[in-house]
Every structure is written in C-alpha cells, then in structure tokens.
Length: 359
Image (cartoon, rainbow, N blue to C red; front, side, top):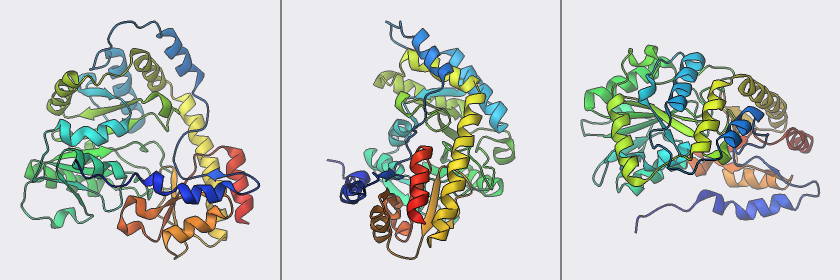
C-alpha cells in the first residue's frame, strides 16, 4: 500500500463545523473552487456536441489543440504547434499521474517547491518515487533528478517566479537531463506582477526541449466541473504521454473537448471573470490587513497568503469564529505553519460578508 498523507480537507472538518455555527452562515474561502456561472458560449458548445456516442480521441480534436495553441500565443506570447498539445481530464489528474506517465520510479526524486500544492507530493508517492520539497534546487548535488516541478504564480502563496529565475531552472535541468513541469494554472491572473510561461522564448530560448506547461480552465472559465485542462511543450514528451494515456483510457469526453475549444477561443468571458476576481481581492485584502493580518507575496493568482504571527491552525480557528473558513498553511508544507491561505473565489455577497465580519 502506497503511503499517502491524510487528505488535508478532511482535517479541516472541525474548523468548518465551527464556521458553520455563525448566524450569518459560513463564508468558505478555503478551497479555490469557482462559484460564478459557466459562460453561455461554453454551455452552448457543450450542448451542441452532446450527441457523441463514439469514443473520443485521447489526443483531442485538432480543433481543440489549435484553440489551445492560439490562446497560448494571444495571451502569453508562447508559440507551440497544435501537435504538441494534449488535453487532460483536469490539471490535477495530470499533476498526480505525471511521474508515473514519465516512468519515474523507486529510488528517484521528484523535486517540488518547499510550499506547494499537495498533489505534487502525492504524484511522486503514487509512482513510488521520493517527493523532495526544496527551494534550494541549485544546491542539489550531481544526482539524477528525473522531474522538477515549478509553479508560478504559486499556489498557495501567489508568488511569481521571474523569467531570470526560470531560465536558471531550465538550464539546470537540461544539464542533468531532467524534465521541468510548470504548473501554470494561474498564469493569466497577474496583479502586481505579470507571470511568464516556462515555454516563453525569454525563458526557454525558443526550444521546448525537456519542458511541459500544464494549464487549466477551472479558474479562467469556471470549468472546474468540466475537468478541462491541457499540457503543452516538448514534442517527444507529449507523444510519450499520449501513448501511455491511450493504453490507460485517459479520455476527455467529446462534449467537453468542444466546450473547451469554445472557451479557449473566447477572451471576453475570461476578462469579465478576471475583473470579478480583481474586485473581490481589492475588497478582501485591505479588510484582512486592517484586522491584523500581513499579506506576503500574493502578487498574482487567486489566494492571499496571510499571517498574524500565530500558528496557522489558531489563525484558522480565529476566523472560523467569525464564520470565515480558510486553509491552514501547513497543508502546503511545514514552512507554511505560520500562514493561512485565503481564496478570493467566493461570490460577491459572501466576500462582502467576510469584509464586514473582519471590521
């Protein structure tokens, strides 16, 4: 039996019960789940493709791959051939299974950030490999490291890795034959800083060798319920992933492929959603600061990485007494023990309720 950690959200149940006791109801800022409607253009595309009796292509339709490549070019200055795009059943699925799909195994390390989305760790364990959390990548010795995860903007901190740092990561990995997988699910949500893709020429020198960028439509287009994501990058790696996924039956439903293509082609709804998040963030951040919390990093993404100096669980309980549920920072690593992660994904009414309770 693979030794997996406790599922973090199960541990939060007693604090959630406390928050629910508030007479005004719970304000759940713990999980970054979308609450706003799925855009009409996406729902129409899903409905129009609903008569899909046959098996969908593992590779995705060329229409979908072209839409993803076009969005990367328009939004992020990344040029990638549509053949080097592969749809995945939500980005979390790819994160969890990437080490296994790449053949990483026992006795090998998967490097991940010191503060990180827990699924990077879980993915290494599922493959029988060792998760190795460090921000001191360049201090590692000459040992073979098959896979390195980077995440910018960071979940949980909202920290942005500048192009110069990412260039060094790419150079380090190429010297050692390591794959760099970049989780870019929040790439379009830069506020005080603008994130850059690992596939951008400023970072990779125009070559995608050894590089994979993982993208999700959960936040951009409110498609968490559709499980719509994709990975792009190194042509050889994409074909390797495709081959294994064919055998494993990892198929994105055809109606979801159609809906995803429509979402990637339409920038208007994404800008409207971005504006909603910006307004909620602008309301919540000063309220937290006035109530005694310091906000660290958080220059991009959908989370505020906050601390009032106390233990993260004590902070979570303090806010739960006000009916506000947040995530304790140690969900993301021991280095988060003095912080909490606060999502700005609740609806306007709930965000406003939180602001009033913090006053």
